[in-house]
Length: 566
Image (cartoon, rainbow, N blue to C red; front, side, top):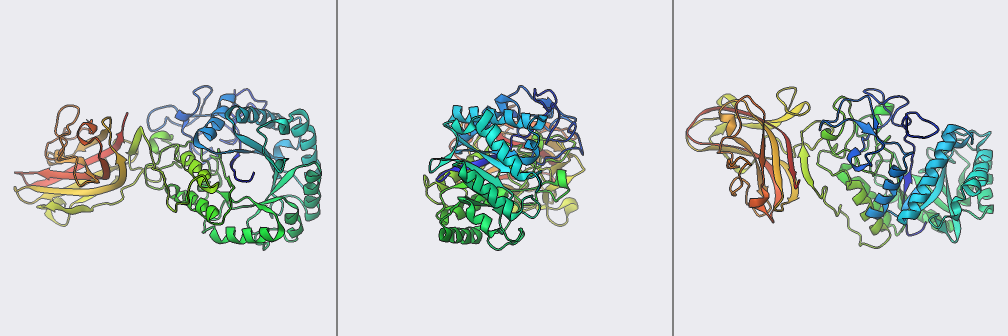
């Protein structure tokens, strides 16, 4: 447990036909997932999961036209893929969640399903050299049965029929198998102080190293049951539950460390990427924002600064409450078109589906001392093949960093529509759009036949260009002058796409002054920009208007911008 970072592993998604004893939808929804009927917030990136088996839903196709499917945790291939990712990205292993509500009846379908998935996780951990341990969550139990159920499950199932602790992959501390018991001391969980103390002591008598998943107010009884202080002192390691807390964790961690140093107990801080459950509990969307990785990273920094060399990531696969670090949909192109889901792009930047796996791996290395402490997120938001993509849909896609903001010195002889005010570049909704409900609209008017131009800075990015880099976007000029609008780049060396030798795939210069598209028709503008910009780095994505020899209004729409190497 020490000097390791484990992620909580739910393994609780099911679907009809998955081969499980349940044979029903579970955790995605209580019945066929469809618009308005779901209990999960973050849509998985299904392209990263094994193609078989996947299960069709009642949603419309994804924004990219592919069918809306979901996976089952019962699939051996899915469990194996999860642990393969843990190895690939450098996460030490998994805490296998074991809910009281699942095991209260050991012969019921839920218990049989839980046991089967647990064995598959054990096998996957052994295959990929990851650790695992059991984490009991007392949710669903009562004061009347909590003691009996936990003892019986450990004796009859975990060490009895499944022999989990015999696995070389089972986590041990001081030679003892690890068990976490989560929920004692919470106001809405079962167990009196006397019962909890007996249970902890019983596990310790079985030669177990016991971790306590306790309320974050465990030291002061804040938002916790009173009288549990003696229980907390019986645990070998204390792990306060921080999910839902959106404030700086530095003070909490420092105070926890000080308190446990005095009692000689170990400490397992909990870090998590963000939280929301608007599709399930009707809470606000993006309730605790991920902030494009900044929130998770700041928590990891606080752990390292406190001198703690282990942590628990909540969670690996909990798409329910949007705490999953497993691959998730990046934007509106990867979620159903008829239902809101959170994406990795919800905070307004393009973030690759594997970003939180990459970030968790870096956090693991920093916390365990393999890498130095750095205060800022040390990895790019995307590593390709897609480096940037947006249809500017609200709540799901990368949004403009600036609207109607010309680059310095970037306008001449251009006014607003009708010749008054200033030209505009902004997201418009419910008007002309190629994908979803929104698009970028560039509008203004040239007031003289002299050289007239307006270059707007729109997206702040950092995209390395190779010889294979391409730019693609949907384009709708609403009038003749609108054909002189185009996407442009400002590179970190001060050069631009418009002044390079880049052309569209049909040979038209990428400079806005070279008219593109057809009035009143959406067309796709594509360019192999890497042939002209190889080795450079895109600093800003611009939209520009540039024309000579005419006056009057210009109006054009841009949608579905993609920069990739595919």
